[in-house]
Amino acid sequence: MAKFPLLEAIIGTMGKVVENNLRLRMRHYWSNPPVDAFPSDWTVHNCGTAACILGYASVDDEVLAVSGSKKARPWELWAGLATETFERVSLAIAGSCYLSRRRAARAAGMPERLCNMSHVARHNPSSADALEFMKAVREWLNEKEQANEQ
Image 1 (tube, rainbow, N blue to C red):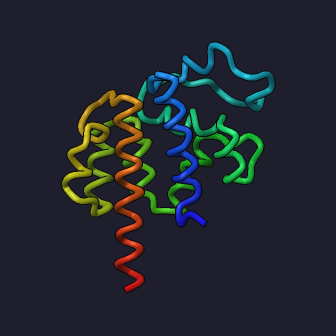
Image 2 (image 1 turned 180 degrees about the vertical axis):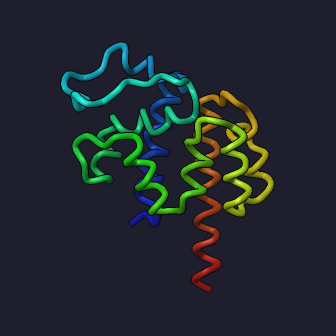
């Protein structure tokens, strides 16, 4: 069983996003959403930032299965990811401002190689940048877990 199941599922979502050449802009999704995909009280945002990671994740069946929800809102996934890892990791992954992502990565104690990755160094990172960063974060978290177990 994965130590970070929600992070793993979100990484899977971003793998699909990259595979389908989608950008971190939910307009690609909103243009043709599945019927009844969203609760009626949702406001559709399209900020075009790393926050779209959780937008894509909130409509991915694997993420929904892991979260235990039929319709997880992005902020619920943020909270779930923060609980599974810690708050600074959620912000480093899905913060809408690159300065916030970079500060969060540093505050979390991530190594400099992660703090200098394109995902936290550019205002509008690519989907591939996000996927690469999340995989590196997963590796770092697993290393921390192993060090704590010793």
